[in-house]
Amino acid sequence: MLHPWTKFKKSLFVLSCLTLMSCGGTQVDLIAVQVTPLCVSLSLGASQQFEATVFVNNVSQSDSNTLVTWSVPSNAYGTISNVEGSEGSYTAPNELPPDGNSIIITATSKSDSQKIGQATVLIEEACPVTE
Image 1: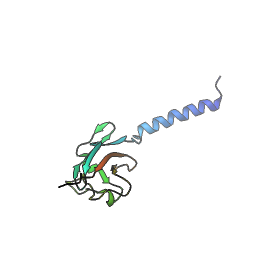
Image 2: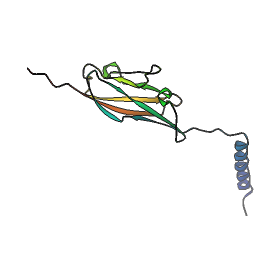
Image 3: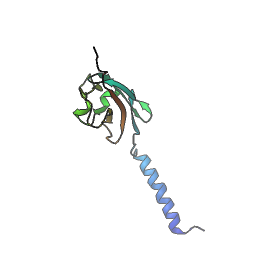
Image 4: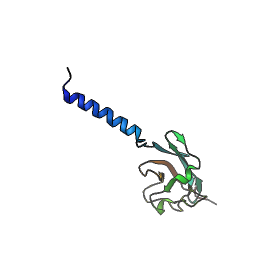
């Protein structure tokens, strides 16, 4: 025989579930961000267009570049645009960054700042010109 308290807890659980369903509950969207290309090599001062794909509940969203905020660690690592129409346009720095030639580009979801996608830019110095 079940203890009366056990029956009460089960009844309370069922009632809670029914109440949540009848009130519509709160749907939590699952968000993921993917950046392409994933890795690219660029010369100093060169440009590259990055594209973000935002997935909400495993469905790709159209015009995803407008659903993210683009960033690089600082201006020493180049610049990336958040201006409408040129989102994701990256320009490499004119000098190698202080800590090496690898730069991380980040696309952060505007609806959930914990969801990011990243790409790597490898900066190549131009070969010296000899005459």
